[in-house]
Image (cartoon, rainbow, N blue to C red; front, top):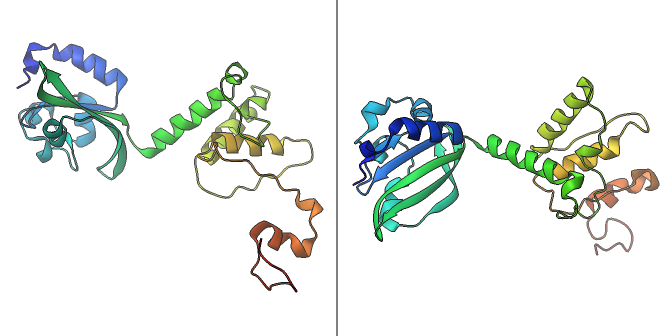
Length: 230
């Protein structure tokens, strides 16, 4: 059994509150020995009332008791909790080759948090400082760092690009010639979940109007005389 009372709970709170969105520690029987204040607030419970309770009675869809039994860590695992998909890490606590408990940490409160962080990391990697260590995706020449300026409008545009890049949606970029539409398109690709895929550019102006649909979306065999899908 983990005697968390021997630890400085105040120090644990300082460490876990400032670093993670929620932390729980259970003993070898799956009973809660510590739960951070931010996790308690998220669950709508009081710290004093959950200590000693079995973790399955407090946290829905928890796997903490299974970590104690199996002794294997789970990294970046999805957990549905209070209507949100959380991303959590769970690790057994081992002392003298014996499993004495487990610790669970909420890394991201929901998928939007993770996507936001992923977008932020992708933006950092497009910085010229990292370009030698990180190859830009084939077909992509520009990134959000090529949008020069620090005015309110530019900052709003960058924020909108990051928000749009997180979604799985079609995007129409409009603007006069020379306003940076291509840079924005490249930036959205770089910050999206498809950043490792090839960025495909098509010059629609060079395709006859009556053929553009078939060129972009394909066609069935026989749709044109003697036509075959290759």
